[in-house]
Figure (cartoon, rainbow, N blue to C red):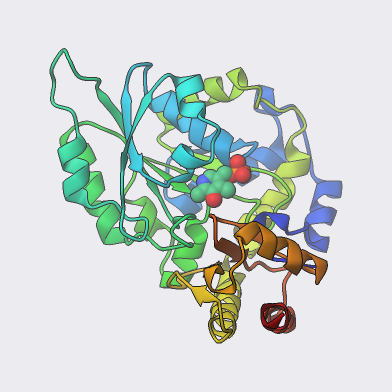
Length: 341
Ligand SMILES: *Cc1c(COP(=O)(O)O)cnc(C)c1O
């Protein structure tokens, strides 16, 4: 099987498995797990924030951020197809009790003028705008990079209005690798950030949220309330540390593979690649084959290629370190073959 469903499917490397075995652990709820502390300190330094917190998933990290920044009845501003709005089971409504105000972006980037116009003036009729969320890279926009300049303008609007800015940076290291800049070029333009260790970086579990010391202190409480206070968590933090410190520089390879895949698929009659390939996500429209995405995904699966339905006729392919260039070529050949039939 060549698994292109998601970059979450990567298996821990040999080095990560050894690190799990040898991790020095303690009770992290007492703040006594050395492996967790090492991960959190490294993450804070790399992300350019005062403090960081190890959380169980990207969703949990984003939710803790919303809960920490907002009060019930607040309104949050976020992109129309952002993960927090689209893929987190309505958690911001169910848990934080906030309402969402979505802003349609261009390749995942919200126009700062639209953000500014959506900020609520002070009036008893209105909810208070409690948070602005930016997603980078933007998943449903096909792994599009939101520029640091766009983030800076939005962060400026946030500061002028006393509204914090949170970045859902599940794949922010992909943005940094593709742009060839340190991740702090992006994180300088936000108050808090969530990054996934378990996507392109390849850790088996976990995410990091980072921000001010005060933010992380309150975030601890929300993590506990959500059942995310873990005990000898060093066994999962240790592979996370390797993911964070050793896997970032190889992400560019995944991006090359995605371009190779997109170019190959685009040559096939009936298939159209609809996104600009900034990072590791390729979105193909299979409408020209007169197939639904679900039917197409099923046919490919029978041929040993796993992909994901991304809309009625859209199929998503995601590259990651468990897929080689040869396997990318094999995937292209297989799609060419099934498309002819
Ligand atoms: C995957 C993803 C998340 C959530 O991460 P999980 O660990 O799957 O909960 C959040 N935001 C974006 C943009 C993602 O792609």
